[in-house]
Length: 75
Image 1 (tube, rainbow, N blue to C red):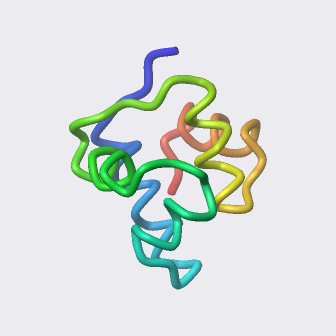
Image 2: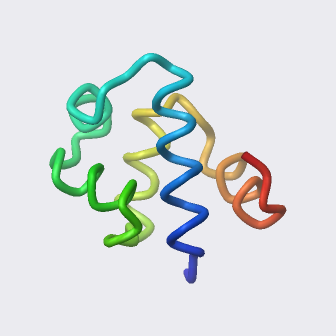
Image 3: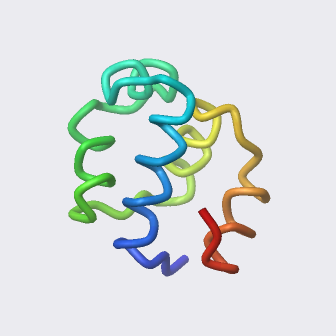
């Protein structure tokens, strides 16, 4: 899976903030390290499929919805 890191960073940060979450809260809800959340939002890290599934769970978003938005470039 090849995701545009810059768009991914902006999209994750936008979704997180829209849900009123800090990176720490999203990390806890996603069962991912807070450093990974921050890395994704800085476009320094690209999650693998398992991490993406966890991230979507934390954002209360279906993986398919997330991937469709990434594909279409919507935020």
